[in-house]
Image 1 (cartoon, rainbow, N blue to C red):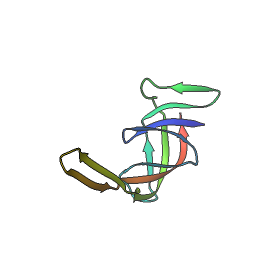
Image 2: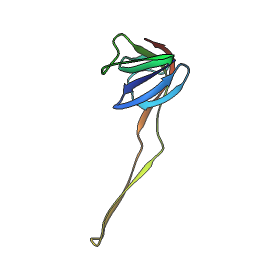
Image 3: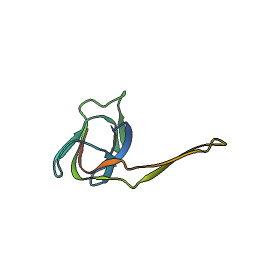
Length: 103
């Protein structure tokens, strides 16, 4: 069974037991999070599609860690003007382990 959930402005396809990195969520490590913005549930023959969300469907997950991703470099340059700027950015994320999908 799988589901498509929306969190942090992005959509993810999740299955039970899967590890997933999402935008930073509030909560302690080991606590349970409920993702209630479920767009689709499928896997056993037919799929249930929400318009836009499925009523009563939810995905439960436990928080395994909070961390920061690898640094990305942002380089800006304007030609013929002598302007260039190089900055780095590390995005915070939360790693989840999907524990259950209920439709």
